[in-house]
Length: 327
Image (tube, rainbow, N blue to C red):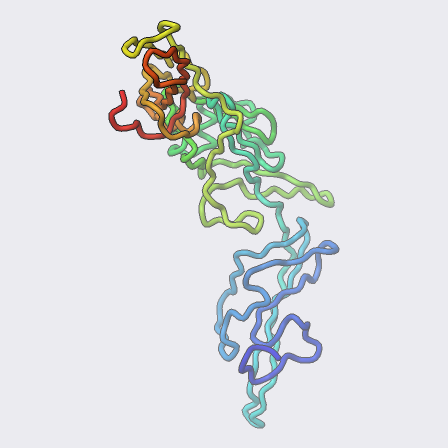
């Protein structure tokens, strides 16, 4: 067996999973039931006929159990030719590490979501944290310590943050916020949100939570963190003024400046058209940016016959272009 084309076989005492030319590992000492996972262990990563001096780097080893005392042996069987007989035999190369700790995984975001009134963001980590060692801070100072400048720049004027508990942080927008569902939430590179676990009397602290792409947390690559919109998010409630019965040329007024669920955007105008595609209120709120305009419209008449009284319905449906020719 072994690597295709191998000139020798692994010795009889070798583990079945470690054939010639493979890099393998075994836990010499550690907690019962612990296992190692890796994309490169037990795989053919280097030519079996060639060895080089230097360090072997495994940057994605994943131990299944957190513990302060691990010892691991890395080993590989390489074919070597006897210069006298010309026979090929397997030679074992190995390295046994000193004791080292396996830290708990860094905290990860479990929930990142707008509030139903679209005025806040609630972030919830998957475990209890040290609250960035800043549990008593509140306001924009805390935001600046936790989040990147790129992200806080979208929170408007007068934004603030506050820890709700050891795993939940609330972000409140200031005026003229531009944050929306396409905004990437980024932690500051200097933030230090960690998790601590005590095992056998030893305190083990995780690495800080991170949103930096390319990092590996708990065996997974870090991906972009977007902000979700709750299904029960509030919609703007415009005030409609005008006659209860309208002729074809009568005017109506629509005021959305006092609407609820405005996502820290004070709407002063409402642009509308007639009978256009349906879309989602939250998307229209959050995509308005600094324009202070809620673009959405759907006006429906119960009848188009002349001389017939109509019941007129007006619905807010944002996030769609205005129908050409509409006013």
